[in-house]
Length: 138
Ligand SMILES: CC(C)(COP(=O)(O)OP(=O)(O)OC[C@H]1O[C@@H](n2cnc3c(N)ncnc32)[C@H](O)[C@@H]1OP(=O)(O)O)[C@@H](O)C(=O)NCCC(=O)NCCS
Image (cartoon, rainbow, N blue to C red; front, top):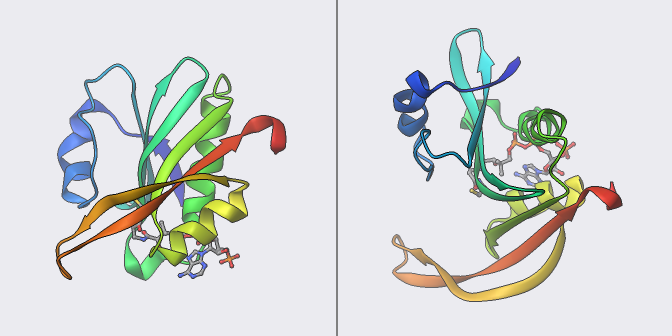
């Protein structure tokens, strides 16, 4: 597996991945991919301002899950952006795999955002945890 930042030219393949992403040309956007040969199998995006990052998306193709790819994407992000001291994210309270991933990485739950996500399939809203990672707790 190769982990590397995605170039502006690769925005289209990243958008095809099917996760919410912001435009690559935005100054604060930082996007990493996990590649199996030439195939994009995992993606991570954060918006970075100063020493703080907001995680926008992380996801891995179903057949590549539980191989440590997301954990590696996050660790690679921290090593490529050493100025980042704090990372914030929201995650649906129903998303058990993602919450387990974040807790395992050292994130802590710091709040709840009521009705933060709309679940279109079940036509309802879901609460989100607000979670925070601090490098000093690594
Ligand atoms: C959540 C997601 C990103 C995890 O990616 P992944 O590459 O499979 O995760 P990793 O293999 O790095 O897992 C690291 C740890 O997270 C936890 N974890 C990951 N998937 C899990 C699952 N299905 N159930 C329970 N714990 C899980 C485990 O602790 C795991 O460590 P272990 O395998 O040694 O037990 C992936 O399931 C995914 O793409 N989901 C859809 C998109 C999504 O929900 N993204 C997050 C919100 S934007």
